[in-house]
Image (cartoon, rainbow, N blue to C red; front, top):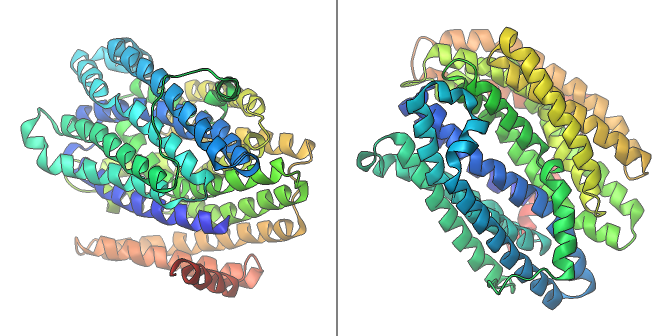
Amino acid sequence: MLRGVLTVGGWTMASRILGFARDMMIAALLGAGPVADAFFVALKLPNLFRRLFGEGAFNAAFVPAFSGMLATEGPDAARRFAVEAFSVMTFWLGALTILGELFMPQMMAVLAPGFQATPEKFALAVELSRITFPYLILICLAALLSGVLNGLDRFTAAAASYLLFNAISIAAMIWLTPYVPTVGHALSWGVTASGVVQLALLMWATSRAGMPMRIPRPRLTPQMRVLLRRMAPGLVGAGVTQLNLAVDVIIASLLPAGTVSLLYYADRVNQLPLGVIGTAVGTAMLPLLSRQVRAGEATAARGTLNRALEYALFLTLPAAMALAVAAYPIMWVLFGRGAFDAESARLSSQALAAYALGLPAFVVVKVLAPGFFARGDTSTPVKIGVCAVALNLALNLAFMVPLRHVGPALATSLAAIFNVGWLAVALHRRGHLQLDPQIRRRLPRMVLAAVAMAAVLYFADGPLFAAAQAGRGLKWAALALLVTLGFAAYAIAGQLSGAFDVRDLGRLLPGRLRRVRP
């Protein structure tokens, strides 16, 4: 599992870094203005469906079934199952895409009701959403192919494909902008073009892996009926975080202009550890856990869940502390140029600190949810997810006036904490989650090491960035030094407290490189 975590995490990190380059360009060109708000809502819509239908509900139902079939019935049966799923998904998502294009104004009235107060902004959001919406079918089919590759323990192509989204978006901003009305139009066309390229790459990768895909006439075979039944509750359960973020957009559209953009930039920074750690651990764990459950290896399955939690929290706890303590310098250094001024950075950093509060919960949800999915249970997460979404909506309504742009972020974090707590209790009561002595010993020490790191960052932040004001280029050096201090403080505190052994990590990574090099 750790090899998969490192592979997915490495490629995801590269994609996130390139994504920051893209977002820095967007911030410089659009800032937190109306075009930025319209584009981010247009991007949110297909991404919401992608994470619900593609990465969320579909993977939760498909990967365990595919992995189990591969282990028990062989690759031929698994390939037939994948082809049937590919055909059904193509037909279903194609119909959904057509309906979305036809009824986009009505969908936009639900997702961003506040935009209707400014007709020009609403019309722009509808136009950009119609350009980006075909990305839905393209990326959901790409997610299916990624599930096939993950089930085969081939993580590289699926993880690397996300680099293409950011690369093509940057290219569109540079070369397409002069030929379209706004930068938002160029970005929207880049989104759809990236979906075409990602799908083509993964079609090639599955073919090389011995699982070529085709599109026969869709048939609801017994296996497909089981798959769809398991997907249905997972549409909410696996995508509860995305539904909470959608609620954030709805509330943000009712707040002053620019709030959608402020939350987007904050969430992008928060998504770096969430994507790198949470997605990597969850993606690598689900096929392994599914095989262990299918083989009746209950002890091994509990061990897998414990190690996944340990890997996730080892990195997530310091990341959350760092984002909360150093939110302003992070936002100012990354995005503070062009149309994104110091006040925008200050407001966005407040939202980032609120998102950081829930970061460990966001990540642990991705670890605990496969504990249900691997056993074919998608109904329990959906029940918990519905309650979490309801709580998020209630908190958003309570916070929107007094906390303004901070309210949606804080509400999402509190709902995530509620969600992960209930999932953990449900797994524990069923005997699937029992913390072993190693994680019980290490977890409090990880918290202590993360708090020590946060204290170092808190006292170093002011002097470093006060000195950096003397020269424009110095702020990058100050941020790099702050990050280095944080890493060093966490490593030293963790080693001294016994949260982890740095020598073990040093031995692990060269071993990984030796395995890959042949």
